[in-house]
Length: 168
Length: 102
Image 1: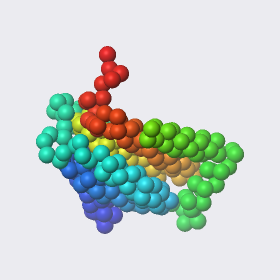
Image 2: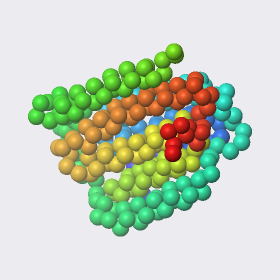
Image 3: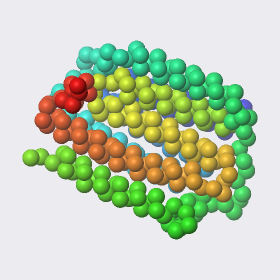
């Protein structure tokens, strides 16, 4: 086992433990803080996969914006949702079974597929994924249209959420 | 050596946990947190497939960027709906939102 393997397994263990706490903890503010730890773990996974730009965006957008927005929403709606008492609905056993079956099935399939033996391709020394990503995002021959569509979607979502949450 | 399937199994575990959260939680904000976990699992898959596939094709990362934008839009609209709901009905329990249920 190399050092890289141990780092990956450590990150995966911390991320999954934090994700488990997100879906099971009674106190939702704690749940949101565990979500922040999970998102950090995913950012670290991106670093392991040489996707440095995505790791930074993960920290800025997910942790800096989405998780903080969640915490604000939890605090705004905290009066009606007590931390005591069950936080799960009547179907939680079925949900747990479904999640377990999905995971076991996927893990079995993936463990036996050709992906299990796929080795990491070497990255050329002069290759820079950040430069590449920047170029294809604004290149008319590549992904400028989906990129612009995503920004229009974000603008529409912002206006829509202001309209929905506006105090009448 | 870490092969591609390790990342995929890690993402599958994260997705399953998110699915459990979405299906079992009462609080609508907790359901949104489960959705975030699922979207993150998808992002890990996309980036892992890019890293282990053809490195010259950066499509996996572009797709992950689009997923980021969609996730931000989703959470903004979702939390606006939750807050609007809280104002009108003083409840954030998903089971009690049955006005359009038949």
